[in-house]
Length: 275
Image (cartoon, rainbow, N blue to C red; front, side, top):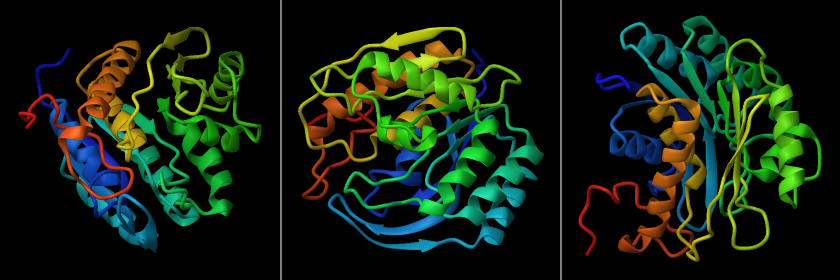
């Protein structure tokens, strides 16, 4: 594991409530020992209950942010979240192909916790074709996996295993690539995730925590994975530690009082004193 503090980039949207998007990513990176950087790819007006407006960031300005950042700052890992539009996806894919970041964690953000759409329907194909081949780790939940594979979302663990295999086949075979398929949408109290690299299928068991405070869990997990990979952990180590970090962030979310809907997780549960 490297002793140098890694620089970790989030390319995502802004959630003013702080529970998801870039603000959640930078909190996670900071909590896990990374230096967080951010490129704003979309603006939202949202809280813990709803998304009222989405304001796209022009693709050329996203490109300018990326060029300016990479021309000065060493980036050890990149997490991609909400991009929203076809043109933004294209420019992110182009720039990351140019700058060759070692670790790229792709969270294919499509729908907010409130149910509001965060990715244009006509952008799904572009995400699949342009970004999946660049990702070193892909982190869909089951509905997102269904969209990416054009199949029904899994309802059982064996169906999850099959979907993980299909998703891995859609990624670039050059180098070591992983799918982290999140099983939080399965029925029951178990929250089993799968980590698959095309050969090995690793099961990551977990138990559901009964709480409404799950806003930004996908953002937090993917940012944690990017940070831990940048720190030099193996994919399996990063997956296990990221899941453990998120589990505790959910379990300690009651220490916060943010909004009236799906509250955020407690990103600094290991640092702050709980009241």
